[in-house]
Image 1 (spheres, rainbow, N blue to C red):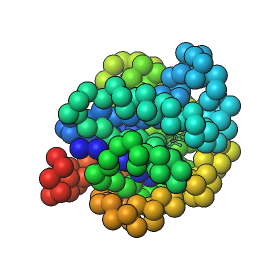
Image 2 (image 1 turned 135 degrees about the vertical axis):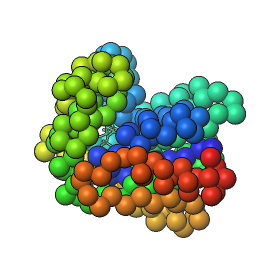
Image 3 (image 1 turned 60 degrees about the horizontal axis):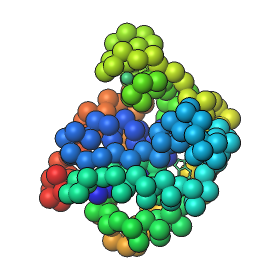
Image 4 (image 1 turned 30 degrees about the horizontal axis):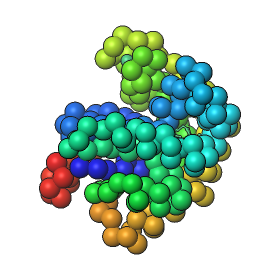
Length: 217
Ligand code: ADP
Ligand code: ZN
């Protein structure tokens, strides 16, 4: 099964995809994680994308598409994938259509107010990338990853100014993809977040149940 997990920054794409990865037996391809790792390692790719990621601007399509193709070619035969953070523009979606077949979109619908509150208190594990929130999804021990005991840190782009820019980019460039895929009759599984402290598990259950109905899980 090949799926896209879709939603605004901070909607929970990373949180849900890591929780569903094992149950679905798919590879998760998270563009932002790939970029952050390459910036950290200061690779050629890292040098190319650093200024964009820091500002919350889109990395140019040519660069993103090359990374995607490379990563897709590493998905073992017969295994599916879950795309997190791609496509983010109509052009990227057009390109994707030429290189892979997508079965379903997992849409995360979260009000702006909740997004801003979540992003400013989000923390990530430096080792494994697991996502926490110091107010709403706390690790068992402060500052330490539950899974691997790695140290937690705050993403450089999780500050109010850059968040505003990322939301703006989402509204203008990425959100139109909903209409784009609806027009193509792509199946959607929609998850609406109503409260900020909503735990992720019931949503994961919901998505798994809907995927089973579609015979995709
Ligand atoms: P978010 O929490 O904003 O969804 P991500 O971790 O998915 O963040 O992405 C972080 C940054 O990486 C984005 O702000 C952007 O600069 C870059 N990026 C990620 N995916 C793409 C993409 N498909 N196209 C262009 N830039 C991207
Ligand atoms: Zn960890």
